[in-house]
Image (cartoon, rainbow, N blue to C red; front, side, top):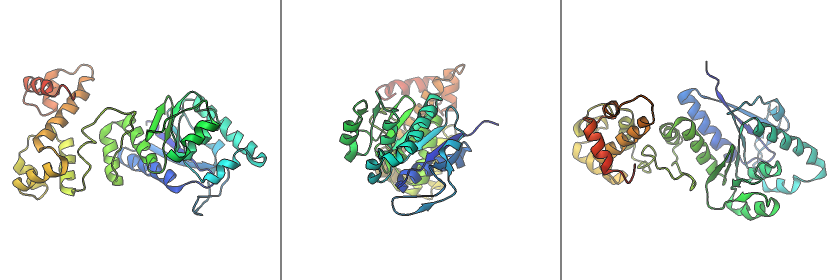
Length: 316
């Protein structure tokens, strides 16, 4: 049985709940879909409280986390009051132990991620020296000032530099989690998780590649979403506008009009883009012929695939 990827969240004092719960929920949803993630939580002590006073209990000490190569460790954001306390004599030893542990995890190829102000913990551990990184917009200058060895970016939702990921804060922790899921499992799973969470999947400025699985979904029409989901998973199935309309309990005319209104493109254009996206993915698979790709993507033949591919050369 394949090892599940572990995602561990270190809970600092005064943690911001959304910084923690947002990405945790994304990995939970992904794990329920493909049984691929084990989520764990740790802290300095068994009991902690978040910035609003909500209490956590039965937390394991971070040193007890058995992280291996390829696992993920998240440092969520926390109350700004803690920033001024990190260098206090009374807490320096406690924090230094955490910094040393983070460096060991990074050396062991554990992927280290921060949300919002959590970047300051990575910076203090030396993990951001010489790396591109980001944090909450209101703290960018402070991070630059206290950690001049970092290359802080102020125009990105999240940034990956080597095995270290930083995000801008609050909801961008979800964006980072979705990006990681797309890295590991492809855009389709990331889209499904975003749909489960009822959020848009926003890509970082550093992530230029477009994906048909994520585009044309920024609407709230349930029937059109259902049809898009079905099309994504049934490209090899021949269908008609009448059958598609019946599937979502709409008339053919209403479906055609509504799909264009909600997505900005026609159903035929959308299906063509889906097929080309799948064809692009299959082309990287060794040993598969162009004819087989055309068949699996729902094209009539190899010639039709090549003709349509040339028509969309600027995109693909």
